[in-house]
Image 1: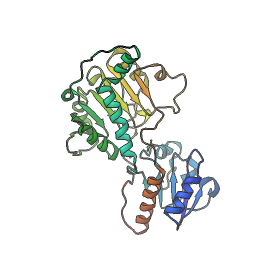
Image 2: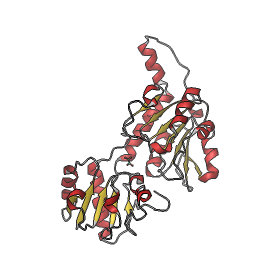
Image 3: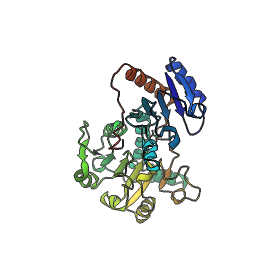
Image 4: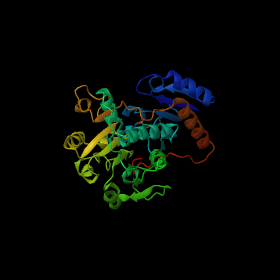
Length: 313
Ligand code: OXD
């Protein structure tokens, strides 16, 4: 059995060593070294269009992340960019859900407990009580309640916040009010104090975080984006923060990464920027998950995380 690997940073050794240990029956090669040769499985993160285009040898393509937009976008470059009939498989949690819940919870609590304001007071040497937010009024909405979003929503509900979830189709999550589809979007957004975006990036969700959506949230709401930069209309966010419609935002993902040095987000203190670290791909967990799925496929068993190419996630 042959595995072909592509990672954009070219740091292959730990992946090859990891697969050698987890799947000793496999021969694992980099795409650069095995280009043009057949393989059974491809394991990739943001591959170039030439890697998968028109291939008939592969049995599955494993994505080294939860979001598969880096693979599906190849269809814009060439209609035959993806091997026909071959399942594309995303990582399912693999240690990401806990990390994302930590990141989002930290951002929510910082805003809820006014810690930015207290830090500013501390720097100015002020001892002053600030009127707290009321938990019961502090409704948080999670857009996209797949594996990661569900974990985030449950974690926030565990703090006693009223939590809403929005998804394409109906989904029941204990302790979370469910909204779905186009009809459910306005009631989901109305009056939210915090909006968390965990949606997959598809043509339907691109630019979804825009001025019209911000206007539905409570005055002075807070936005957290841990999905993709292309979900957000960046100028609309800056304008909404400057007008006071939004109190601020915590952003982990951007249209251009790394965020350009002269980007206005760097200059706006109410916007917190982190370098796409909310949920890192954990190598050991990812390798163990992919190795398990390859074994299941070889045994003719179903696996989780197969992407619906029409739906786009
Ligand atoms: C992912 C990511 O999609 O890291 O997993 O962005």
